Amino acid sequence: MEIPGKQPAKGCLFLVLPGLLLFSGSSLAEIYGEEADLTGTRDTFDVGGLEAANAWSDSDILLSWEITPDGDNWDYAYTWTIPEGARDISHFDLDVTDDAHNDPNAITDANAPYEWVDMLAEDPGGSPDGYENLGVKFDEERAEYTFTSNRSPVWGDLCLKDGGGPDTCGDLTDMDADDFLTAEEYDGDTALVWNTGYGNRDSEEALHYIARPDAINGGNGGNGGNGGNGGNGDNGNDIPIPGTLALLAVGTLGAGLSFRRRKEG
Image 1: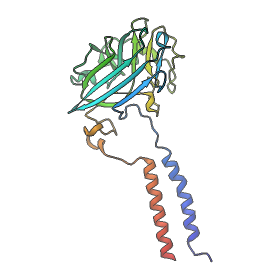
Image 2: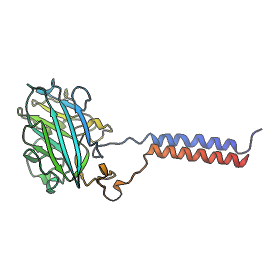
Image 3: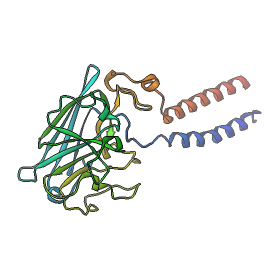
Image 4: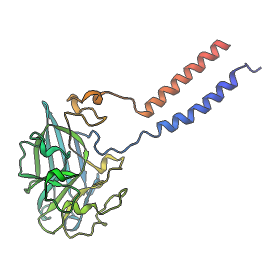
């Protein structure tokens, strides 16, 4: 014999679950500018994440980084491994926050001379105040670049250039807004290396970017600080991701239905 009220409860369950599943499936989002890993590796041959053109296209190039909390600051170290006999490094461009050139603590104790450049413009010259995509350019050949910053690591872009060819890292931006520039698509004459997501703000894949300094003291929109080094206001709060909320909702719904069965039985 059917117990009155059972069928409507089942119908309610089947109506709610699709909505929860749809909600949980929307947890992916663009990660450019989001909190990044303190250590990582990108390369052209195994892990991936790097594109290399012209004289560097057949070289096994590897980048590794290590970022260490240092009081209120962060110590950044980027190490490049390029096979002997390949083209030498001319400079290393690294994505930073657009207001970094006004902050004397954005880049300190660098082990190579540096200047501000526009990462996504053909002409790297001009005034930093007019830059929309500020980068810091280390003007010296090194296997390792180190500096200290008051800005915590988030996902962003980089570019490595050799000493020959007229192109700059800004010439890599001739692509569709929702596309990724591969080495085969780059038609310049300069040996360059860049992260797969260079200039793209829509990717949901961390492998397309590298860690670089951006937010001051851990605050960057909804981001919290790494390693307990703070956050601004509510930025350090732990907020359940949509998938977690969906599971909690399912559990709450199941508990409610079980209580209803016991009460009506």
